[in-house]
Length: 83
Image 1: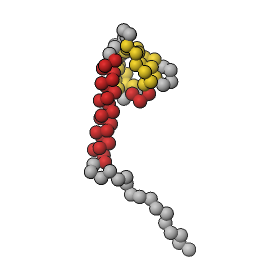
Image 2: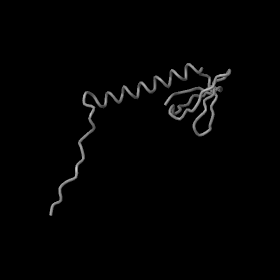
Image 3: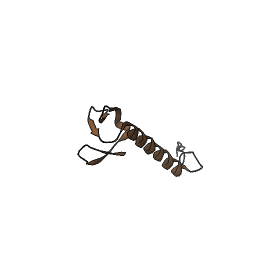
Image 4: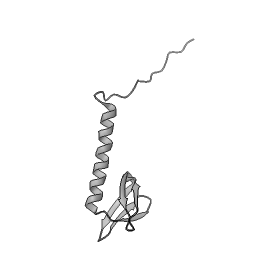
């Protein structure tokens, strides 16, 4: 999630993965995959930076959770039938 500011000064969090396009002329408009649009005070460059930082935080957190062992948890196997 990234935090953006509407022109009236109110701030809200937005799922960065659902942004389809960002326009800047002169106001910055975020166009979402569902067709919703938001006009925000942040510049195009600021939006891109926020998205990059958000994704970097996600990857860093995933690395913390995995640690040195990239294997998933215990493997599942089919148990032999008890006849």
